[in-house]
Length: 542
Image (cartoon, rainbow, N blue to C red; front, side, top):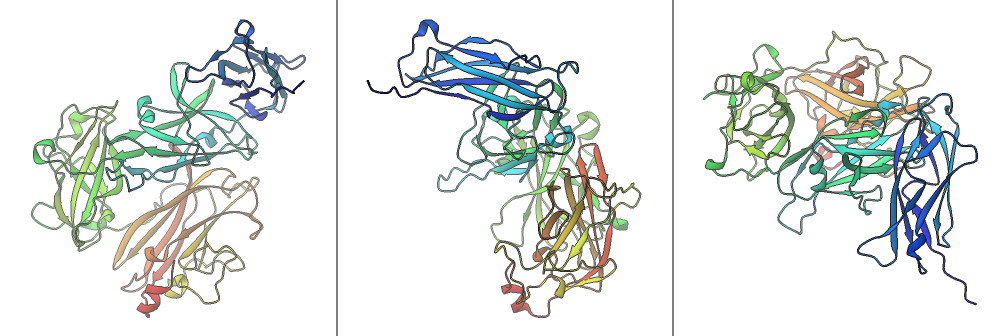
């Protein structure tokens, strides 16, 4: 008698996973049948582990139904409810249950998990980009996407393995206008109805990493305000930044709103008085203006022929349209360093209205910024953590940090013939910045925290503040440094040919997100990076 091929039973959760105390997990159970199924007893049976009182299910005997577009795939849903009662569940308690398909020869799904308490700060998502163009009409041009990541940790900063979380957007339908791919950048993640919400159900990997990709699919502008959530545990955590998906094409005059009005720059160049880092912009009142609308500012370099319109990196959120918008109201502050001094730009804005109400694009105005703004770290705020370590282009490994007060010269950022990193992808020019973390040292950044590095330069030909990037402080020691090292790279092109005498350069960093931010102490030095060999400057790589 031939051996029957086994049916396959799968569940949208790993067989071993950390679950959060109090969590509700939407379970989707799927049976791929290789044999005939008797519809009269077609059900999934869930059995909690022997004596288990720390979990329950919305239903433990669930009729499954065949998917409409399939002849062999059956599915059903239920909710796994992890108790929050301290009398029946404690940290690290085992969680066990079994799922089997009645009337099928599929192997049982045996789950063995562990009860944990999440560090809620680790729920906040980070984005590789906060601005994406809407899909181009040219099918040959690939759609650019954004990578979304975080590292889930428990209250003791250990990774949460295979833990399910929910991702949603404040405007739920905006997620449906994007393609979401799993960490392999291939497998599509479909939206699910989760109670009263629509969102994505995503599991961390065995090391606690959450990673997925977002690709816009619609030509209309919108904002994705992502939130991550452990259902029934605490509140949802907003992402570190919104994701703007914007159509930057300039419409004709009749379909535009008036250009931005720049204080002090009518018919003359823009000059910062007294070193003020920002200039003031007025935005005319526009139709259906509401609290929560986003206004994004854009530049176009007129010194480059046919240059693209670029997002300036700066946006504002409308709070009160009556007091903020209108003729003569220069309410919004925009950093001067979105312009290069002495270069003419077109300057414009795009309004993305809330609740899917669409977008409005302004006409452009021409502005030439002639300088005057200065940037430096805030010396009035309380700073909790040690300053960063700064290294020259030879990198962090077997290389002493540069002391504060030293002048960074061209030799600090150039390529050395002796510099051959083990990893061929490691840059060989620029600067490397190390921020050291620790669990037990209060003046070190907490392990697993989200860290943003800032650079400030104040020189004769360069005055700027640049957010270098945001990363997660590692929870394991760096094999090469022997410590918890978070390393940033600053490209040579952002540092070279700063001239006019030794300028000033500072680095500081922020730990956390939103309103819960702490600061690292300031690293201060000088900078004069004029290049003596232009050929070397052009050809020495990254």
